[in-house]
Image 1 (cartoon, rainbow, N blue to C red):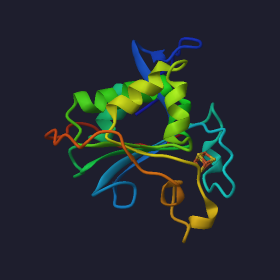
Image 2: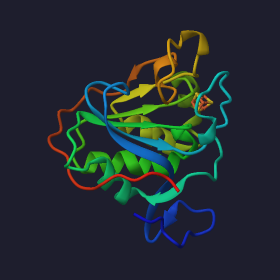
Image 3: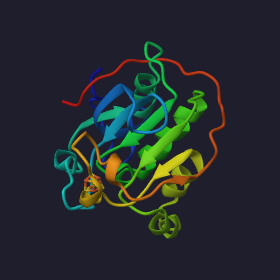
Image 4: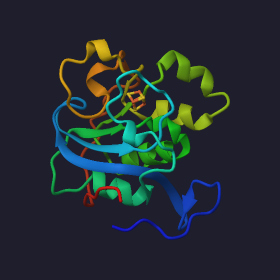
Length: 190
Ligand code: SF4
């Protein structure tokens, strides 16, 4: 899958759709949420947590631009079983409009459960909604938010992603039991 060739300056739309910058995607994770997960790493983060083990994801312009509908296809690849989709980074909320489009698309395609990791706390994010409505759209759409900065002292052993040592867990909605999943394949960033 190739990234689109044409990006409208300053917009979150490409080739007639919404997009996000992606570093990679993988399936069958048993450590980034409940059950078996398909996971995507989004680009960009300015949180600067001490001991962050994914500094290569920090650059805002890094990764590959991917249309949201194609990313949803890849995350919901029927060749892989899953209990849900987890979105990691980087800081997924550094791309609020694209992330909102992604979680909305996943839900529209009957994704069973969506989970987002963030270096922000839930209490920090809620007031931000007034100025960045897409953050509110994300919080309203997903099932679980794993929130708070990476805390190096809580890390037991390196794995990948910031997940094991973040400080909070926020069920922002009960799993809905939405049936089924569909479509796609996986790729890594260029
Ligand atoms: S741990 Fe996560 S939130 Fe913290 S700096 Fe690294 S990528 Fe950003």
